Image (tube, rainbow, N blue to C red; front, side, top):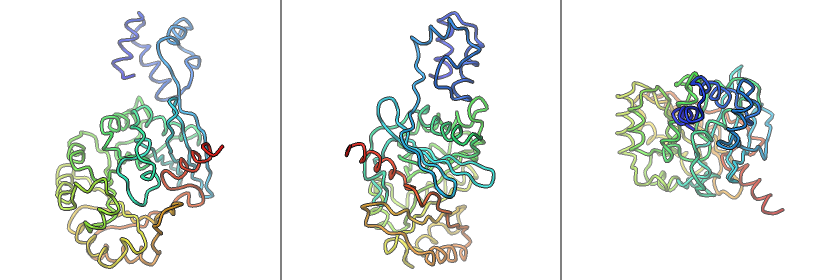
Length: 339
């Protein structure tokens, strides 16, 4: 329920206005799963609410622990739809990677989630709950969130933005806007819209190639958004917001790690405010794609740096578990179907 809807319900039930804040604190900050846990509400109100609302929360149906401290979860919502989220601790901080959709309709050729297609978009509450699940399991505050899990956040723009605002709100998770990152495959109209939002949320674009033919092959769901138009809208985004976007580039052996690919990426990023995250591809069972070498990754960094573009090789987390988006869901769902 929205704040306004909860206000209406409390008014209808003849409750004082402060009940709204009490309930929202239990739901959004304490992440309770039962009305009975709301100890500062009268028992009579809790009893009435049992017939009016539900606190059905996601059920954890699988959990994997990595030697590097990362934890991956498969959560199932009451309608049976499951999604993945990850908790990644590092130097006293905790990052949560959450999904915005169950499955994905973009169909990226190297992505485990893309293999399964789109089931449905998630509500703002379902996105938010993943972050709270990570927080509660680690027993510590989440300091940053990346919407880089399953799904294309900008194909679910309204709910994604509502989740970001709740995560940012002091009445919610209270995470700074610059520590909330949305990753898009390059949905140009939504990038334009995002640039006009008042909050300083961070934008990441899954690029994976600056050669149109290669990108079309790897990311068929965004063929209609050409690299030329993406380049233009990203310049507009930077000029409008003054914020530096990042470009995600998963290095795939023999596909997008050639000298020609490096040159095209340098041309795309040079003279622009940008940061390139080079990702060592997670191997996905059944995929024909293999990760590039560390030597090629270092060459990308060297060449990008030579034209004034900051680039880093992302530290792969959870490589000893089903790290790639969609892998855990596929393995568990396959097991459930088998048994």
